Length: 274
Image (cartoon, rainbow, N blue to C red; front, top):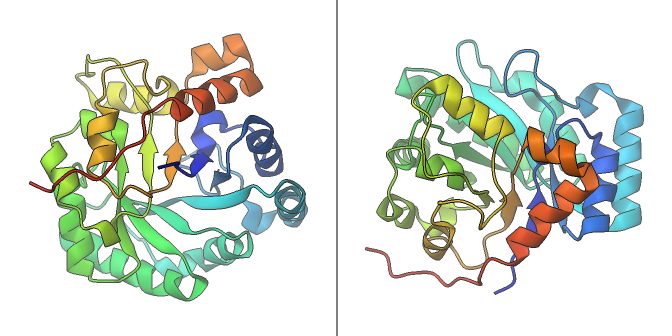
């Protein structure tokens, strides 16, 4: 089954949204993800909520190319998180035709994450957006079981678990854990590859995740195993930042390399759930 491929902004994070849309069209992606808020303080983000000209340019690029916006990044549920503070983020995402919001759970009190996630889902629902909780091994929501427990406890129909192949390989997550995610809770998946060696520190994990991923098929991650346990028609976001190789190849060639590698992945079918 052919997959809908989306270009995650982190693959070329410094590229402005309108230019990212045009680059995705040139290479063959059907959609892009946009990072409207930073992943960490001081990080790169393209705040179209505060940039009317950039928003208009992005809308024009979408209209001219037919490439859509799939997901929007990143809302972090931590200390002081208030969903209403991010309504402009959701408004812009909906205006651009976005479908999903990437959410991280940073608060160590799981009950606080559940409450914040439920409230965010309620706020996003009228905009037609899902909220997808990504597990990462260096945050409190560190594996697929924890993420699913939070999403199910929140109990919102537009809540989901975001599976990132890198985090599956580098957390206490098994293929059985991926298979246990109900189909209705899987709205999209992020893919990349990585070496078999796992960094021993949080800083090392973060560095690899943000700066040193490999194109699909070049590393040791069981991508077929992961995809086989997700819905066959699930959209695929290609999140493959690699500072060294992108600098060597140039941005356009790097993005094309990522796209072509993703296209070479074998079609998959849902495996029987264990």
